[in-house]
Amino acid sequence: MHGAGDDGADGPEDQVVGAFRTHLLAERGLSAHTVRAYSSDVEHVLAFARRRGLAWDAVDLVTLRAWLGSMVATGRSRSTVARRGAAVRSFYGWAHDRGLLPTDPARRLVAARGAGHLPSALAVDDAARLVDAARETAGSGTPEDVRDWVLVELLYATGVRVGELVGADADDVDQGTRTLRVLGKGARERVVPYGVPAARALDRYLTATRPALVARGSGTPALLVGARGGRLDQRRAREAVHRLSRAAGVDDIAPHALRHTAATHLLQGGSDLRSVQELLGHASLATTQRYTHVTPDRLRRSYELAHPRA
Image (cartoon, rainbow, N blue to C red; front, side, top):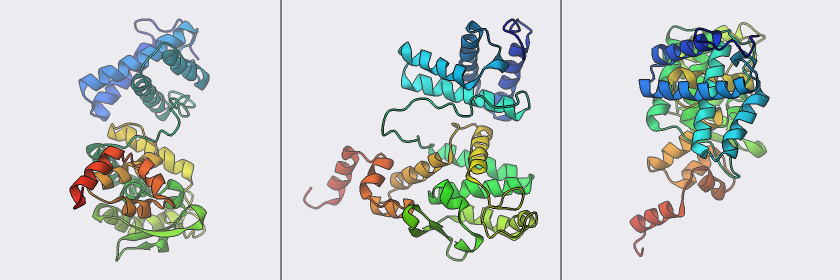
């Protein structure tokens, strides 16, 4: 652990921030403007830590929460706080992945949200970048990389909860009709469709990758199999989504944001609320309306377009 005086011109702090910039440019392919913004946000938290006598690698979750709180107290906008929080999570996640830190202090860092707020949906292009990054990683990667490609494809294609997906068995997949059977809240079973890209990922996974993973254990029936041959757990699934979102250069998201993204894109594409309700497994249509940000104005426009006496 370095002391607070290790932040000179050529000190470890400058070196690690410089390496992070190189990562953003060369590995994630972000624009120079975005890299400058990320760097500025990281430098902001490191300056806060220095004032507390801490070097970059001594920062903990308590310090990061205090940093977020200081911005709220000084009137920073919610979007600014959220952006800076995302940049710092990306920085410390990268440092941990590279072995520069034994733990990731920002892993549980969440900017405060008002009551009733839901995770933001990815834009269509960003969702495509995420699944493309997963597919490219699987192209020359490990069996776990192929499984994580399937994980991301199915979360986005079906809108199921991550717990529902990791709870599914291999025989819950019907490749002929491209559907997946899941068990939702209240033990309610439903069947959800998926598209051609997810079908391609599943075909590769079920043909060769899953058998190789199952062989490491004792013959689990699970659809998604962990590194030791058992059922993939939710924590590992969440870690995979966070890792792939960083690799794709999109907002660092959790699996639930992919569920929200799927629902939002369905509505934007013209799907009706009842169909989305069935897909998501909501008992109440009111839940679906809130979940997908369907505003009264949007309902009014739809009504005026469709009703003969509008």
